[in-house]
Image 1 (cartoon, rainbow, N blue to C red):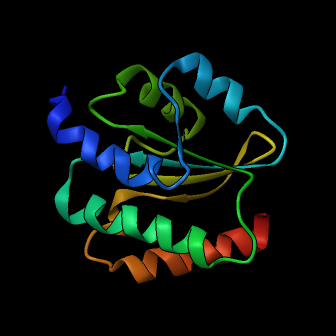
Image 2: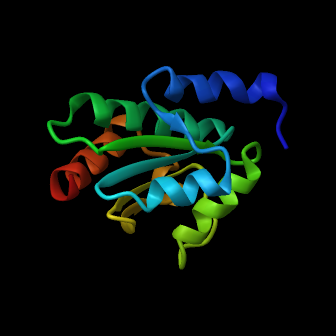
Length: 137
């Protein structure tokens, strides 16, 4: 488990921009079962990947005409039980953090794994998400 003083600023990067934290398994299931679209950002301390994933997600939300109904986040290695529950909804994909998932009516419709984030600029991640938002939102 990561120390709060390391994690809290990275959480704030999303929560200060309208992302709701999913902190319990119950909240995960309740949120993902709702009708409409839910974006889930599994946040991480990984500098190179999360350092482009967070800005990429924020760019996509800011610049897309269509947006998910709900913006949510949970932090790997910190919100452990919640992330574990999110990952049950991501099967058969293996655990990945950071990662970005889009759900529609409770079903996973778009997923960006860590290996698709690593080495890519935030703009590329944003473009990928904007395309998904246009298709599903």
